[in-house]
Length: 493
Image (cartoon, rainbow, N blue to C red; front, side, top):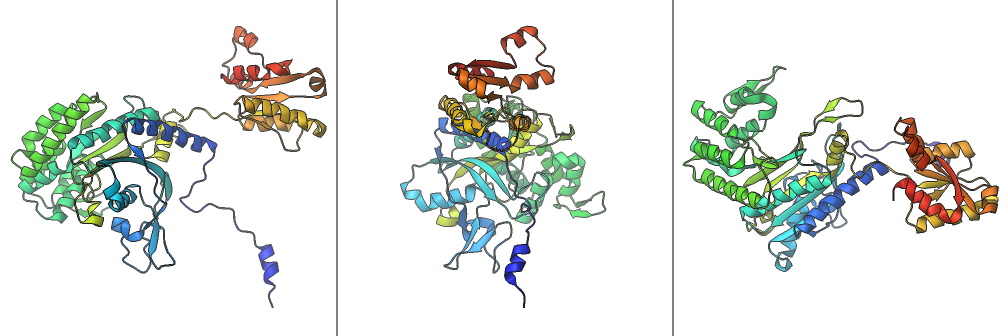
């Protein structure tokens, strides 16, 4: 007979995080917090209301994740509630918004302007930089069909990304309208939804495959380097030329690009409608002070293939970025959005216009770090009070209480190691300074402060100026009542 107690005692689980779920230490959390605080301030200045919805939504509320099997798990993490209904962790922040507005429409101010941030979960294969849980930040306007609502979202995205740490010129918003290409395709005889979708997918590969590669995908198809054949959209010569002329109509400035687009889509009712909407977006952006180098019209931008119904926009990082080994890395798109007028209708049956923008907070933090722009500033640990003698613990806690009361992060070392390991501990915590109270200092009413920042700067060759050294000694013994002022001078506060 097996002794289960013995087996349980002997079992040692392997310490491991589930694939695609990252542990975050203070540096990452501080970066995300700094971004969210900066962006939230911009959103609120534009008059957007904060909203937080629950982590779970009913699976049938998540659109493309409607249960089609006994267990809905395609793309989502789902479980069955005690009433037999399937719930899933939210895949994004837009589907919960659609459910919330449909559920509360009668009591909401219209249009309803909200922003939200929080974790989302995707049951997808994880990979480098691709996680199953990550933080998103969204802003949406529900209930306005005006193109000016799109313009405000774009302007807010521009300001939000700059506030998050991307100065002007570090990122750009690219704008397009799905109606333009739809109208062009209708005029070219591409009427079926499948053919239009194939064209959109081909256009979406312009950056990767170039004009010649897209031309093949718009026609019969393309054979790639591996020998795999991708079936094309089946357009013919003139129609292919029209699509390529359209996606290459970008002329830098919004006004010039609109003129180029007008020459290509002229005569298409849907195309003319999309052109008129882009013209109004351009006018509003100009009034809001958003220049061409901050947001421009790019006819090659395609997003959400079957999701967006009008204007679409995408934020692209322009900064040079490198990884920790100095190798160049490409982040490309760091956010996007557009107009989606059909999402709320899934619940109500009534078309409800909506537009919004979303970016991945963790991805943006990683991009800023790779560009040498640490979000939230360099990590700073607490001031560490060194412990020499158990009998003097009340004095150590008196000193740490004095620092905390002055708003200075501080801690008493509570391990059992000696002086040298305590100094190493403080250095690993990136402490700006350590405070030392031996028996002599306690008797004399003094404290000794060692400036660790000064030591780090000296080690990096940044503190070789004699006047600087004289003004900021590496170690000093001072009266206890001067402690706070001396530490503040060290930390620059």
